[in-house]
Image (tube, rainbow, N blue to C red; front, side, top):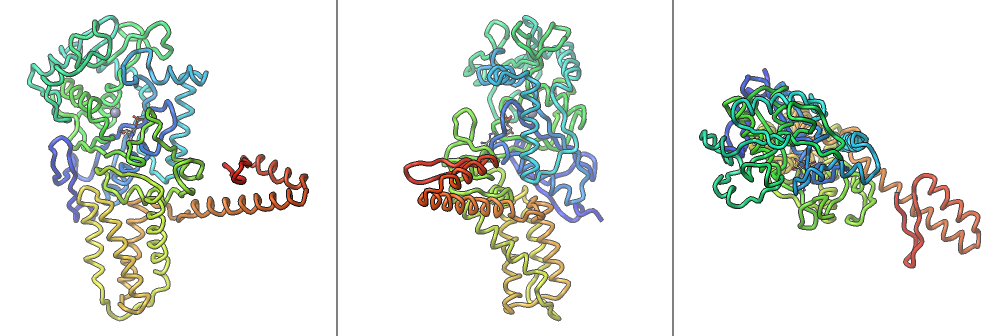
Length: 495
Ligand code: AMP
Ligand code: ZN
């Protein structure tokens, strides 16, 4: 029997503001859409946290034997910077900066994104559509919204008419709990005052200025789609007019997701999503991680140790473990101390796990492992509570240690149950990479040790005036992309 039939999963729904029992539209099947990255630069560790939360949610739904269609898009056009000016198209701006075609920018950072996901052992989504691959669908939706009186054309751009939408009693602001009248009073016009009827109206299609390279033909002239529309177009196409779960970071709730609700309701007459899920932010040293403030670290910089924030490298399993020790709806602050503590905890858990094959079975069990197993499910059933699950995994580790010490007993069947439960939750659900098991961190550590040894040998060579050898060490390390820097406090290195 499918596992989900025995478990009662509750999800916190941003739309209702409550946790409720999750019931998919079609029994046994789930449609889930998560807003993907805007690929105009490298994803930072904050982005990784959000995608990892949904990776674990996807993994748990699969573990419960649901058939999941998981769509995570790539935003490769149309996402404007905050001031909303057409000249601030992120891709166009970055392509000028790097002297590359906008689509070269898209390719470069899509490749980087996938590399990061691989490093951190993400499952691929079942569909990964791009905004530029769905221009026709976006034009069709825009036309539909114009035809039904929800949108208007202005100077070759098309705007969603929030006022008209609200006049029909459709309640713009319902997802982010905003009062529309306050919104009208407090928002300045971001897209060029003259073009919009109201400052709250948002662009479905933007007229491209002559300098704007990313452009497509449309009934309204050459232009490009608005950011909010791409997600409505792609989610409707692959998951239908109403689907089960829509996710993203909290910062996307307004305006992005609010606009998606409005677009869906205006197009189809009903709400597009049953469960809206929002992840909380990753902060570093107390401040939200973000590219614009400079308070960010790239995921690979944490793994290699090439950064100024952390004392040493931390492998992908440690990062995963650390992230999942916080609930996805709580803020998580990452710091050197937090990473070191996670590494210690992770190693302790894995050491106990490794004892499992060596445990001696008894005729009876003095520990209740069946209830313990259900506690692991209960944690995940309670809105994917990974910190509580991890606490339960430590409880499993405690059982192992007690049996190992001879303080408690387990039958062979119960040892097997502990083994299966721990493997399922650690590797399948939490996504710890069983094949590396923290080895990436160890490898980095070992490499660091080897380089330090070579630095010491080079120092000795210099003392002995053997400059040929000292230069050889430096040059051969450089050839391996390991750069030594001599400073007044000694030699440091980057790799
Ligand atoms: P973007 O590429 O900017 O659209 O962001 C991709 C995803 O990362 C979105 O779901 C954002 O909400 C999320 N995100 C951005 N910054 C952070 C952060 N500091 N912590 C967690 N998630 C974030
Ligand atoms: Zn989106």
